[in-house]
Every structure is written in structure tokens, then in C-alpha cells.
Length: 300
Image 1 (tube, one colour):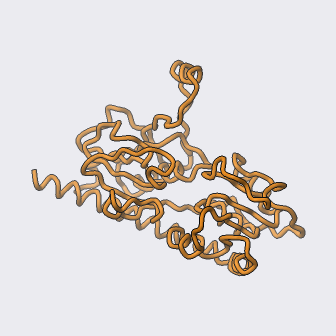
Image 2 (image 1 turned 90 degrees about the vertical axis):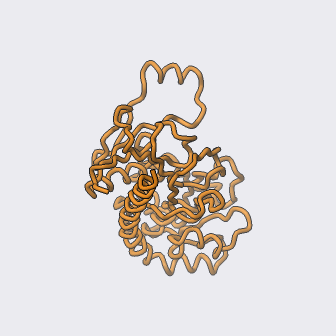
Image 3 (image 1 turned 60 degrees about the horizontal axis):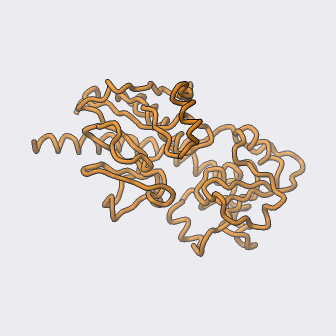
């Protein structure tokens, strides 16, 4: 199937430099266009409930849809949806709102864990990692990830470190561990601000066991710790998050902290390798989509 035959439309929120899932969606459009495919973004409707007053305000004066100027991410219109369109939806989009003939569902988080899901028949399934898959629904989704190393983060080797910082992210309103009572909360801060705090603090604690900030903290020289939720062992967590094998302590035990500190120098090489591997998953994604559509057309 020729490159120009299909067009990919990725349903994505406005760009947010602090949202890993949103970055992945925008980066996919950029990667597809770099490969010579035709790809564009289509603004995603909000999934969170908002006050009626905010709805009215947004109706009469819609907020600007943001993109990253460093990426090749044109914006699609309804008229761009044709019989040759492949709509790419994250798991939080219900159904097929663009009415595309071909749907690729990209699982960026475990469906149903935080939001309801509604998948259609004959969808092609892809996953950002094993933790996001529902094999009983997908039959085993294919890997597709867009890990990019954020070069904002580096160890500035400042002479003294003290104190701690932490992130909540997907943990929401869950109970806090005492180690974070007097720590600096990083949620909502810019990458530049977080890099500065990482270079000041001795410890970083994360309540989210899958965030890249754990790796960035290690790169900056922090002792990076994931506060375990539930009874999952380190091996069980690593089975779903192999990027955490170096530089991160899953728990506060002395041996785990020692492992984090003695392996933090390996994190950047692991991330660089993962970035290169992500480019290969994009090529595999394109091949799978074209093969599936070609096979379906052959049966018509």
C-alpha cells in the first residue's frame, strides 16, 4: 500500500509538556510525517466534566488548541476524514467519534482503571507497554511507544543536596507517606523548575509507579523512590515497567535505595536505547495498519 494512499488522524488533547500521553500522541503524528506518511492531529473533546459556566464560555470562545512548534503536527478538519483515513484513538476516547472506517486504538493507560472505555469491532490494538494492555479484549496488543529523552534534565553536580521532593500524578487523593510531609510537590511545575529542584534535593518520591519523572530524577542525581501501592513486588512492577530496572528504588528498604544509587548512571543509556526502539515500533505500526487494511480489502 503506497504511502500517500492512507491518511492518519490522531485524536489528541491540546499539547501539554507535562502530560506523557499527550506528548506521545503529538509525537506519533510528527514521526509518521517524518516517515513520509500523511498524518495530522484532530482536537479531542474533553473527557473530564467541567462546570456549566465553563462549558458556555468554551462554546462561545473555544480555548486555543496548542501544538509543539518543534513538531510537524498539522491540524485535520472533518472534511479530511475519508474512506482512507485511519483514526488513532487513545483508550479514553469512547467509540469512534470521527466516524473513520479504520480505527487504531492506542492504549496509553489501563482501560477502565480510571475511565470507562468503549471499543468497536475490528479495531487494531497497540499498547504503550504491557501494563496498559487488556489481552482479554485486545488479544494481545502490539507495542507502540514514543519515548523521547527530555534533554532539560541533567545532573549539574551542585556541591550540596538536601531535602526531598515528590509527585502525585495518577495517585490522586490517595493517602500520603510520611516521607513526603515536608517535601516539595512538583505536580504542575515546568520541566525547567523540576530540573532545578531535582538538582537541589537528595530524594525524589513518586506515588505514580510509571512516570518518566522517576528516571529524570535519577539522571539529575536524586535518589529516586517509587512509593509502592498495594502488595506488588519489585519484580512484578518491573515486568510492566522495564525502564525502572536502573536508578529507581521500589520501596524504602536500604537494599533498594542502594540499588537505585549504584545504578543511576545507567539510566540515560537505557532511555536512549528505548528512544531508538520506539522509532522501530512506529515502522511496525505502519506495516501492521497497512497489512490489516490490505487484507480486509482483499476479502471484499
